Length: 377
Image (cartoon, rainbow, N blue to C red; front, side):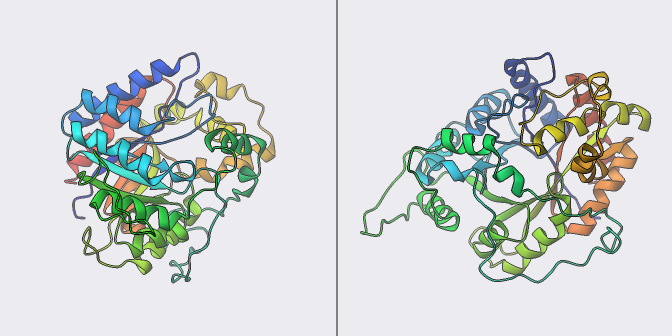
């Protein structure tokens, strides 16, 4: 297998009993260690109104982390374009690049309460999953319906607080085009007026599109020849569809001459399987809080998670995520990541690990990095 870099996606989780400041300090410490462990990228997610997540503003956290690291690439996974403008996005990352040139990844997402969108043309279907498995055996669980989340009162409140009254989000593809034009210095308004962003124009940032399916995000990335990140860790049922759609829409560009894909996965690694599963005990309860639209809770201890009275509905709500989390020894998890890479044809893998104790989280990343290097990746 060719060299497959590993990166990290950090939600800046708040463990139960900790503060947002604790979580931020933990994330910066982890990024410093990830740099030493040999990880290629360190991305921060953007989430709002979640009591257990401190990652609300990727650009702010990136600025803090860039000052504490030297070489690892840093990025957003992703900036939510549903409640911001092309100009504000380019200005933020232009400022970062001015101080830390050549290290920034600008990951763009459709999130922000937008309803799902279909691609303008239908991409070829992905290889069929037979009995819930990809051709190489990767687990592809039944599709999870996210529609109830978009209709929840909390998501409606989030939209209300993030957008000015009466504001309408810009068309996603048009917004991406505006970002690319502002970065390149080629932006013209419909009236022919130029706009030049300082700092921002000419910033040496890699633009990525994040997507969960073969829909509008995959089409937007492919048609513009941009890098694409698909998330097995959030929507495992649609990961094959997402990468197939992106490849079908791909057109060579000034950025890429062929498709470039990163795929994410949730992992927990320990010296033995029993310890790893103990560390991962809180994951199901944490996912439940997200999928009930309550908002991510503070990440529980194993004891707190075991105290929850699980209903059958609760278990059904999170089963696909638990089944597709890679948990175990370094060898076991590395085997599963290689299977994910083979099934998707990913050029890179992006992993996210949440445990209650910061030391366990660090050790998980360290053990996996050692095993990945041992395999020659």
